[in-house]
Image (cartoon, rainbow, N blue to C red; front, side, top):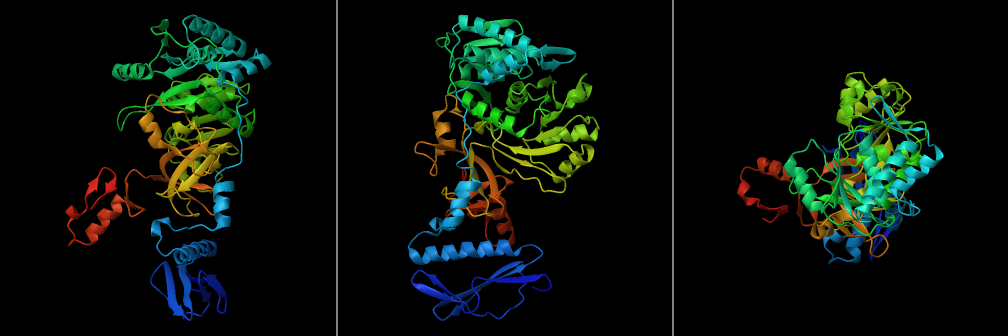
Length: 524
């Protein structure tokens, strides 16, 4: 190494390496300084090729280059073993690395059982342990666990009399307050699944959800209205439906994501192992019931003896009478940035969960500056995998990553052909395991498109394709890179549309009309 330049050889001089029917012998290649940050040099040698790599040491470290050359070696071995095999199908991983990526890094082998419990079982069990503890705080009103359980049981009895049981879907359209929490818990206790309907949303959207979800009853501030027979009243099982959340519909018809009790319970139990009771003593619940962050905000503290501190939204936090009792904030980075800018986050906050948006490094640093000693978590997860799928602590001075899979979750970085990719190579994130949703309500075609057969797990298993671009880092942590919506497939490789446009701009002799896109495919 010298002057910021470094070189790495695939083989040392004199070394002999078998390569299919060939044998490579390491030979010296005269070093020439090339005007590139990364360059591969190859020269004919007796019986094969001599290969070395020259790289900018300010941009690449030796381990990364060694890994790249290892991938190249495996690729060359694949070529010689099967010369007629398409390039897109050639292996990039050796046996040891593939075992590591599909095993330890993916989260395979780590179980997260639900024990057969349902979400409401966890809350009622806690009510028996701490009946007089505060369960819900709204304004200056406090509701104990005993009161919450009693009111939820009363609502459940009413719903059962109306025929609500397992798999029946019940709409909940209430302003934020204790009754909202009571209603959600009551619907689950009756055996039904709750469908959030935001009173602030346009009537057209609410009507669409009512019709699409096939709702049997509706809980509002005026009481309970039933207009269709539900299921046979019976105790729900962990495999029954717990809730259905509808997407925003910004890219088309909104779709309902159907989540079973066992998936939500697995997430709640994971949180109970990761977050100490002191952190869950007062959890800010500012997320709309229609977004799955609310599942964490309600059921995690209520299963651990903590209090749910209700707010209309995150920005209303500064006006809460008991804001000084908040120990955990669970929100999106943009909302927290506003709270920090206003200096309204109290020192009582012990943990900050950020999800739903990319976490800027500058915001992470500001959290540590204003809340020294607080824990900061960067969490990632689509609704289709139940709230959160991966998580990572973000320490002062560290680059925020989305980290590693939660217990019971499996995360794979795959190419277009659903083959695992080496560390450092971007690919689509696929998720499987305990948190996976049942699918899209009444949309078997869309469910089959997004929930695909799992080639790595037990027979009959599925993986959810997220549409997100990620990569494994050298230590096995996941790095989020963005969406893949603006990519097309060219002979097995993904190409950014922006790259095509840039190439055309560099070569004005090529007419833009030569590139023909149909839907998401490059066809000419």
